[in-house]
Image 1: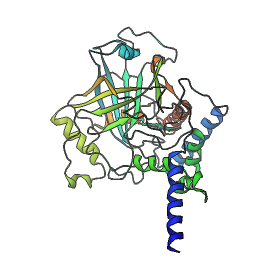
Image 2: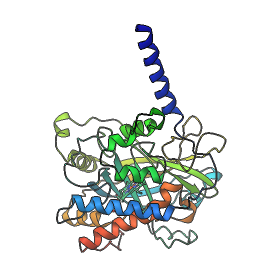
Image 3: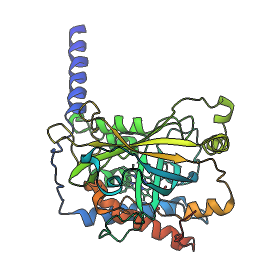
Image 4: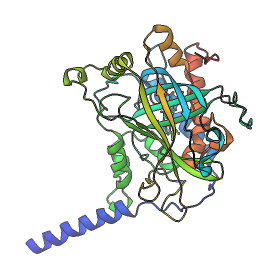
Length: 363
Ligand code: HEM
């Protein structure tokens, strides 16, 4: 009997091990693989986001994801003086140039109810560089005047593809989505681990952590992921402050009165000979296969950012990974559907709130 129990436990362990390790079959390609049903899938996600927005709404409609902002702050995006030739595309083709930017720091949760900073959550950093053509960069087809980089503080996304993402959005029980049915080979254990890693305790401050793109982007002819890592990950917030529901905003306000904030902006090149797929952001591109290389510094000068006007401006900004130069455009299926979903979410909330997207971004 004891022997049988041991065999059962070992079999279960092996099942879980194989289900965990072999649950992605995304091929490694340098070019995108376009699905036939992407328009349908994009409409499906947009519809679900709007439904959730409505379910959560008060009189005010917030963003469909990353609803709570800690702040929008003014920043400089300074391209490094020395950049290897293979990174010199788009913004990075002009070493030493500086771009002005806004950065919106946020919690990942959609909706404002119970959105406390002490909750386990993803934490977002969205950069909007403006006047990007002022230094004579070649104009691109998308018509965007800004270059935006959207990241959160986990290196992997918690779903592999758009069909899974829609199923997750539509499922009532978010845990059962990962472990549905009795066949462990069909469980999404790797994605569940990613989700648990994404829902992490808050950082000491939005200025003291590392953010990642998760999904892939172009850098000229190459495929990359990008990341922003705080220049200093030190300093501890006192535990009293962490009980305040808005402590991340308060901590950042304190830090930016005392001095400036700083991040290294880095890119990681895809090596097509390694397991670095572009169509499945639930797979981490290992740094041992290809390290992140610094290409710019993000400097957040001393400032106070909490005026009601600035908070309203921040709420009305609209970010999207598709506000981009062609040379830096997003790739991969989850990125492709973001194009329509972000537009739909932004249009809906601006219409409902009778608000306009700010056009004058300069400071
Ligand atoms: C894959 C990695 C992803 C990252 C790193 C990411 C990051 C972010 C960030 C930082 C924001 C806040 C933007 C702001 O400050 O205004 C945001 C907003 C949003 N995200 Fe994502 N996101 C990801 C994937 C997705 C996907 C796959 C979808 C849906 C298909 C999605 C839907 C949204 C929506 C609807 C908003 C709100 C847009 C608005 O109303 O302006 N995100 N995301």
